[in-house]
Amino acid sequence: MEMRDELKSKLKEVGSVIPKMSEAILNLRNEVSEEMSLHTKNLLKALSPETVRNMVKNELQTYDADKTGRTDYALESSGGAILSIRDTEPYSTGAPVLNLFGIPLCQQQNTPRAMIQTGVLPGECWAFKGSSGSVVIRLLGHVHVSGVSLEHISSLISPTGETATAPKDFSVWGLSDLDDKKPFSFGNFMYDNTGSPLQYFEIQNRVKKAYDIIEVKVHSNSGNPEYTCIYRIRVHGTLSETYQVRENHIFPKILLFSYFKSDINKKSSFRIREKLLFNVTENY
Image (cartoon, rainbow, N blue to C red; front, side, top):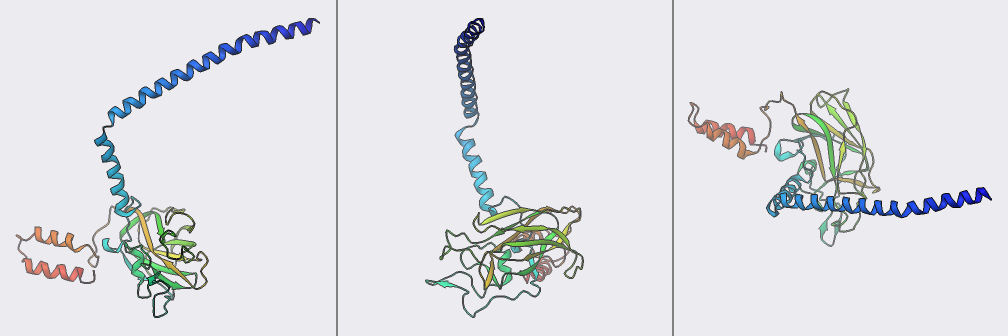
């Protein structure tokens, strides 16, 4: 009997505490809510509409520049170049690889250079036979590679709605020269054709050495039994501090022209410099 009375007494005590705890929790919640509201108002005051517009504008400009916000050292217009495709066999039928209602999905006449150019619309790719192939790219200069990006056509703009020609398993290598017998492996990666069209891959193996030649080996594709299409390969990282302009390097003509023109008053004539400009950029 005593135990029952004691238990009732304890329950009564707990029952009397619960309302007080609930009230304390409610008060605390209100205080936090008021504090958050105050901070939000202060933040909004600090960020004027003009500031917000500029922030959004800057982010859009960064994305629009190359979609990644990262420098692409493989880009042809910045100095990148295709050195070799090894024994990879281009896929050619004498006509567009695939044509749907007059829209080419991948043009036969596209060269491997398409992989380091900016176009990623339907047909702006390079196709090779089968599901495995290789491409060797000379970068702008010696780069401490931090990652690569692989881009394929979006299924939203694919005339068939399919992306089975996209690469899947691939590896990236750093080469000292085209015939390097001991290339450095940056890692093995997998492109998911059901994900974002543009996918970034951080390298798995790091090295202090900076490379100016990169090889991308495709080991499988996303299901197409006949051929594989590569739309865009980007190589990211940091340009080596010891990098110097090579004599045969390709740079945008406008930059070279500006450089030579600014030096016009020195001993060498403008005509000689113009000739040098042509020699440097004749393969641009």
